[in-house]
Amino acid sequence: MNEIIYKASQIKLLLMDVDGVLTNGILSYVPAPDGSMAEFKGFNSHDGLGLMLLHQFGIQTGLISARTSPAVVERATSMGMKFIYQGHLDKKASYEEIIAKAGVTEAQTAFIGDDFIDFPQMRRSGLGIAVANARPEIKSAADYVTATAGGHGAIREVAELILKAKGHWASILAQYGLEARI
Image (tube, rainbow, N blue to C red; front, side):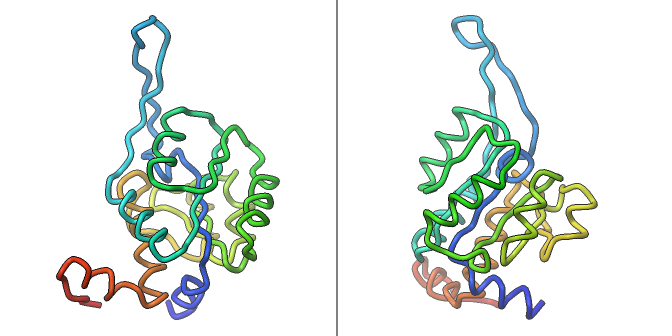
């Protein structure tokens, strides 16, 4: 665990997949007023606060998704994510472009994924993370596996891991009149 804490303390950029990571992976379609089908996704509010806390301490965030969804753009934008890349089944080029734009190294990047297409980015990142509901092959190859499933607070868990490793957790809790119990 000490190696994970060290790696987490180096993170300046947190990237993630969307379906199965930022959401629970369920894709729902509902009729729109014009009769077309609209996609519906659920996002966890705890993940949102985790992202905002990361931003408060200068940690950049972003996503790379194979699918394209207006709901994802809305959520990512409202959470202050700087990098929103959709429609990229091969995520390598997007990953490299984001790192260059963010001005960080791969060692300063964490990537959270759940399936095969996320593995190349996880492997290259300084901290490769799999969510609890990830494919078994991905979990076995990850540096860290969340206790929480994607869409159910896994991003918040990772945000707390990073913020604690960087020594920010006590000051965050103090903002709300709480004490750290680490």
